[in-house]
Length: 346
Image (cartoon, rainbow, N blue to C red; front, top):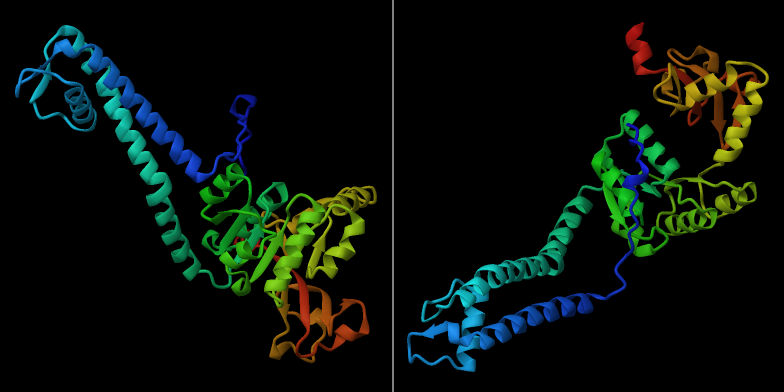
């Protein structure tokens, strides 16, 4: 699923509010008081247009009382506007103020009470279901492509948690069905909130190499056995990423260079490599542990896939090397497999 391109008219600039919570509540309260004072002043100036059925005299306290019940309720009928000016003011000024008051009160209650309570409840429910999930730190170009590919390969969107500081990027991740967290992935509390210790893997593509390496270091600290794949753009940082605890380090710039160089030696080499890397191609790369039935057999005798590499005790062996002529228990096989669509065609 590709994101639709956005025209220049759709570009918006947004910043986090520089005001703390108390300041936001204070200015809303000041706005309410300002509107209330405006209504009181006008009613006091137009008090001759009001009628008090109790004693026939409209005092300042009567004006305050009438203004309060007019704005907050429908009134009790003991004080009523009788002149045209007073009625027009109540109809066209007080009524909109009354509606505005309701919106301010409801909006404030939702923003600072109900939404936070609801968000905490939803977060606790999501956390309860996080087992064997994949955490994606960074939802830029590489991160979003990785999520698309994971879903295309059969990973449920509900099993993917996306962390990013960009709310607009997170909106797309949420539309895919992923759980999202708008926070700093370099912080311990952020990764703890997404149950990083119980995750199956983490993909790190934060944009800057320094940030990606710091996220990797934090993730490794909290989950010593976690599989962490990180994208770095500077070749000098690949070693640092591995030292930070990355299981796999991918340099998209170098990979693009390999494809470009390979294309000069054959028109179909780059196409086939891209085919292997994408779920939409005819073939795919798969990694698995050797089965008991395959032990003792050569790599070339695999029943379904085309074996290309064996990992034994951390060392890779190619299909041409003598070590792969007899598979052993614990070997990890990398093989080329047809995709589901290709198998269906066959």
